[in-house]
Image 1 (cartoon, protein in one colour):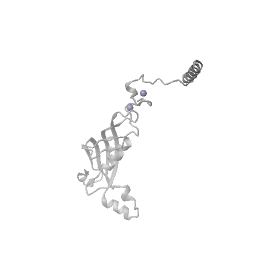
Image 2 (spheres, rainbow, N blue to C red):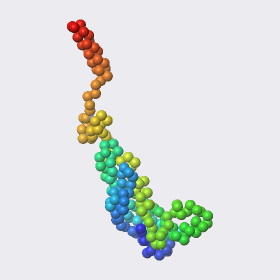
Image 3 (cartoon, rainbow, N blue to C red):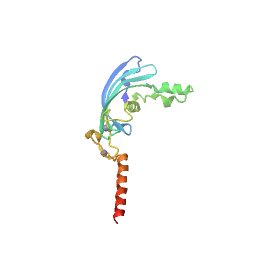
Image 4 (cartoon, rainbow, N blue to C red):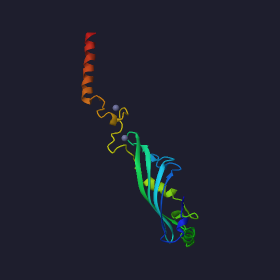
Length: 184
Ligand SMILES: [Zn+2]
Ligand SMILES: [Zn+2]
């Protein structure tokens, strides 16, 4: 929650707001995110406008997750811009009364002097995170045969039997069988 009281509702009044908060719960997606208790560095500007308070700036944090290819731990710095207008409660009500029924769902509204920026932070961080985090852009992933990490073992391969060779092998085997029959 941000306290906007100091702005005194005078349009044009501006106040920088830099603060580091701890994530109250994980912020991100199931594959990657800022863990609970992780730092969220907020570098914000609060500005009083006619309709309410405009909150803008950046949020920074360190997200951890799993590489989509090799399942190694991935740590990335996230920095993303945020911007949200928090309407004064009576402004939002006036708009709702004017027949715009969706307005309360779509517009963030101040609770007294307080702006709940958590949903906005969550949305911005999620948008900035990769869908498929990778430990490095060219991560070779895991061996499809045995699951070994290919990054640890660049020459890793399996001696798969060549199909032509296996045909020859079965020919030899059948010859062996006929030899045995002759001898008996
Ligand atoms: Zn990887
Ligand atoms: Zn393998």
